[in-house]
Image 1 (tube, rainbow, N blue to C red):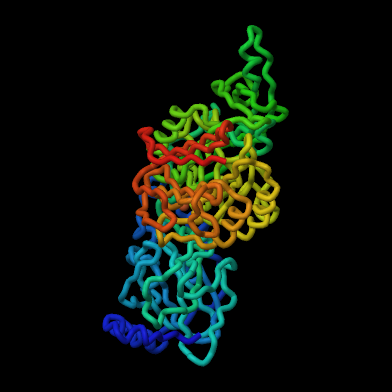
Image 2 (cartoon, rainbow, N blue to C red):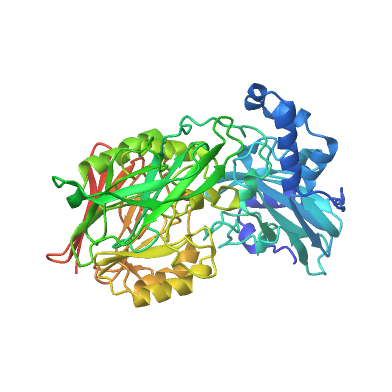
Length: 616
Ligand SMILES: [Fe+2]
């Protein structure tokens, strides 16, 4: 690939011309380095080995307070070498200049950049709200290895542009490792990360010489692959022998079943639910409760210094009557340690009015989020279930964060089922392992993806299609179409994390508009309940990517946030109402008389901030 030189656009801009000449002289200097070639243990194994050594040789107190300078001083030469060269590897057929495009706020990270002779190119631009800078180094043809993003975790992962240094041979990139990485082009529409659907519709003005270069699109989740500080946590909510985090979900038919999960300390190795129809309990001679055994599994977070192992118990009550309230208690089957009685109500068989709550990202500030969710429950105790559109927690594979989440929602999810979707933060480390262990969900999703990551369920006259925007959208499109086609529901809702219509121009997800919104149009989805943008947005009804006059024609897309991290938003052509810096919960009332959906958004004080009525 030959670098494009859009001279015509540069002639009238002296600043750009100067930048171009500086870059040209920088970029075509002699080769100054070679790629390392060799067989090594993987970064993953190396990191596991380092953590294991730390754990065995360093007192816990010291380990918890260790800073990055100390960590670096404890790495062997070989470990530094692997972490600095084996995170991403590939082969090129011509000499290239490798240009690392990284978050400029990273300071001296990645640690290997300077050590290996990468030099700064001396300018910055803003990409997706992040200021990035550019570091370059020349490599001979052959294998090239790049190192980990950082030893501290966090920050956005770098991407790498490749500039061929011979103009007459077409650049080919082969043997790209890890296998899920892809090669793209540094131009409008670039999707920098393979594990996030956001693309940049319009890149900021780049020096022409960089424009269109091949780019290694990386996996943003792997930014924490070599995190070696703040690894060890304490949970504020350790287990005891008494059940807690008692949570209702639906894994099967909401009319006839109820799934209940809870946790105990590891000394409790079995679980059981006692349950009884509320009307039978309230008689003069209460009926004898039924008993259902749970399955119990061990869940481990070895980085928790207190309470690393818990037992989680899951039971699904079957043969229930629709639209009926039950009382239940969970325990281990012995006489001790039963939980206080709680209550759930099955879904109606017939069409009946009902309400539910939807919230966007909780993620940060979980104690304040707790006040919001408690307010929602106090204000609307009749709401049948709680939809969370992803990013329930910040650190999805660290249990102390989940412990905080459940602690703050105490008294709610044991009475009303939670209906969660997977956000990018549940996917920490590249897989939503803890999320999938925490929630037992319907297994009626696409066959080609892991069960429970996408699913649907029906409640009264409404159907909900919950999707996972961390996976490829294509993997769920055929299933979504089939499910929408089959649906006889009056009201249809989609729930997923990354929004189809973003509240901010640099957080765009065109893939969702390519793959899913045409189906929303075709089968008339009423509302898409989304998250991720840390702002509030309600669009006009949209069809064929255009605003339309009424909700009868189009779909209304909502973005909301329930936690305390906020991003700015811009007025977009599709914004009917937007807010920044407000956490909200939404109540959706499905009314049968008049066939209306009444949508209301409230803040933490219970103040109405937005509302909409859709009539059929
Ligand atoms: Fe997110």
